[in-house]
Image 1 (cartoon, rainbow, N blue to C red):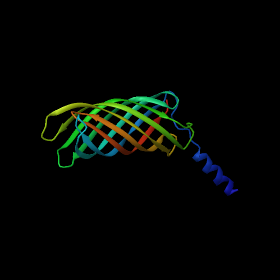
Image 2 (spheres, rainbow, N blue to C red):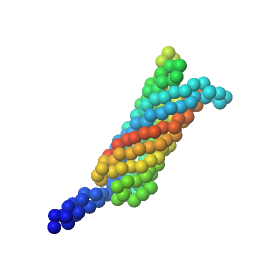
Image 3 (cartoon, one colour):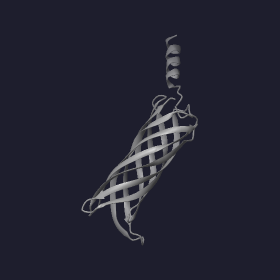
Image 4 (spheres, helix red, strand yellow):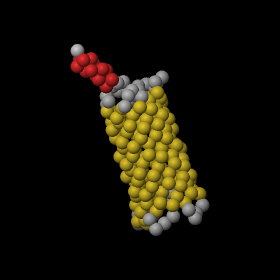
Length: 177
């Protein structure tokens, strides 16, 4: 009898209904670490850089498994043999989950566009834009909290173009309507 009770308790606790359905909210964010090669407008390599970016977000599920929202962004980067830079921005994002909402593990893809203001040490402030696409698995701890791991591509448009491959991780909280 104890074995049956334990089995029922375990399977009941593992059953979940992730809140990726129409009308619910998504609040969370992720952080990425990146390494990039910088090219000038003619395609010549001008340096290498690395940095960290933090992307909080808030979104709404307008359809099952599809959310749209806003993501601010904060970043710090260093260039090998060059200056460091810091910046912030905001822009829209769209996210789609591929598997059923009751899966404990899901897969998602996310795309965003961000308009930035940045300051490079020793230079004046500049405005630029960035787009990013990312995808990866999501592990749900319960029906509201999820941990995600991502692999992404980011392209910044300054006076030069910077393309980065990013590894990231994040937490999302799914709020029921």
